[in-house]
Length: 339
Ligand code: KG4
Ligand code: ZN
Image 1 (tube, protein in one colour):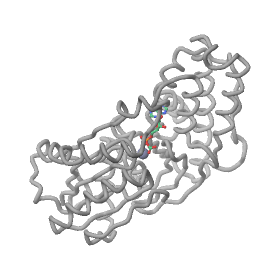
Image 2 (spheres, protein in one colour):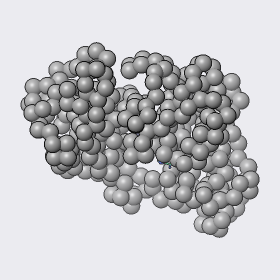
Image 3 (cartoon, protein in one colour):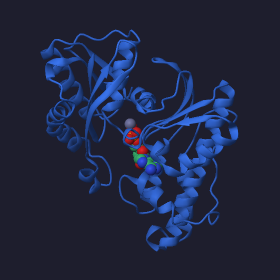
Image 4 (cartoon, rainbow, N blue to C red):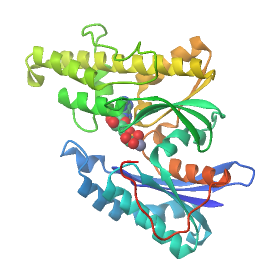
């Protein structure tokens, strides 16, 4: 079956076509993506109204491109999967309305999905995918969770952030240091120039004995250092880099140690890392190092599937259908911004 996937929960419009086979396998045939990052940059963050309008402009041409790239015809689509939430209400409505209308016109069912399920399953798109069961570390702009994944739709939450998400902490700290949007990649790039052990920052909840996280105090600790040094404008380039380095070291250490502890507690040897922060090279380096010592394997989505994209939604939709989930009759729908 040919499954169309549509992602529009935030500032990326993603469209993809995935061909699933009766034996449970499948192939990603095409995926097309438009990032709005350049458009929101001037505002220092995502402007919801602009995001919705841009999704409307992009979604149809992206579908055309995916069809052309795959050599498939519109009439071959057998189901339409899309992100139902969480995310920006207006942005979600664009993808949901497009998906439901198209599916209704084609006479095929829809599969409304949780955005994080897409991230969670995205490493299955890589050439050497993990096998169930595994532990997943989900680190995005809106979520930080450790999950036990026993199969498609069989997820149990082991722990999560009590305040800021990891990506949010990266973004807010980047802003404190006067870096542009999106802050995560900018801060990571600056951290490379920073020196270790110049600034000491806390490792929040490292020894809490559970799998929860808290990152807002870390951001506040950076703010305190910045103030002590006379404010962001007074910082030298080296000081900013040293602070970025210290922040990244703290957050990465907590993520790595808690992930390893969750694996041990679950008695599993495969860790999947998904979500935008999964693109962070220092996180990958330290996880790989820890994995070599702890005899577990770490699986990452391809770099292009770490941040939001349509491919993970097409895949998750196809897997849901293969696993016997009921598809929805196309037509009426609701989005779930705070799901
Ligand atoms: O998964 P994602 O694309 O969107 C959400 O669903 O939130 O994640 C975006 C988040 C942002 O906070 C961004 O700053 C962060 O992922 N991010 C990074 C890196 N690349 C993206 N954070 C740290 N290092 C990176 N290289
Ligand atoms: Zn995401």
